[in-house]
Image (cartoon, rainbow, N blue to C red; front, side, top):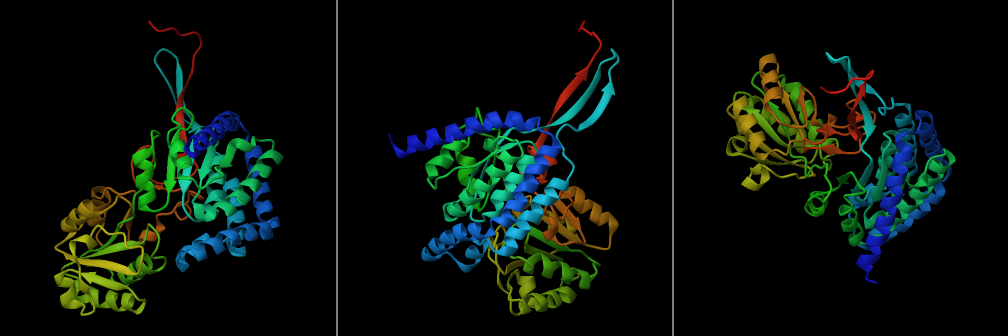
Length: 422
């Protein structure tokens, strides 16, 4: 039997078990789900030495393969990361359970009482890269929202993910829940990812989390609906009459706090009337932090250190201390630029003008639009969702950060007293 066929059979068995588990999880009580989350949080702390030993095997292999320092950092399960994972699970346990919530009821003329009730999506296939803490984040969110999940991590984190999967299974079992509610595919074979993407009769949705290459691979090969974002080409527009000190603070935060994440600013747009005053100010602050500026001709006339921007810079997700800068004639040109080059992720305007702020909010078609705030706030935790499984920039089934509510759908419920259709 070929390796591909073996992978298909293994994934099929995992998905069948997940489907059965999803039916039990959908009717599990909040107390039972919360107990599993709290059990897992404590197990992470208790088993930290064993987790770090498994993680060290991944780190050694990754370092030998030439992985960059930044990627090794993302792969590391330090005491701080483990403590953060445990705290995240406790926070999810404390969140309201969306499953079973009735979001509206109305009476029809024939006396029928019609409503909508939140239910889990079912079985989620989650394909992701590098960071093993995502294994626990995804399992916790899926568990609380009543979804079973089949997890396929990257090859660089296999030992870490399998160690975490063992703790998840024990926590589920001790809470009286099926261990198949959260399973890690125990192979690095890409055939297993392809097999998962073909299980449309068992898996309800696929969520990929990683680089653009992974997400395009998933989208191209999946028979199952995919919730995705390819990249974060995020913009800050500094409007005419803006508070320039505020604008500097926002731009520095949006670009420099964590330049390698999807909600970091990649392009700065500046109103032509503010360019002479603002660009030298912001350039000094950004250059001090090691940012390379790639500017349009008007930018370069004001900032000597800026190198010429080329067409490929405007749609680029640099994920680094590199920033494209363009001077625009006004709000309309800024919004046109965002519509042409943006990725529907995060856009911000810095302005004192309420009417222009409203035009920007209404006219920019991105998952999060901000006024006088950093793009770095496009994050489930920062926006009050408690946590997120990812950010979706395709509008079905959700748009933006996906927390517990976004991992549910709604069914109609109807109460009658004997009505029949005429």
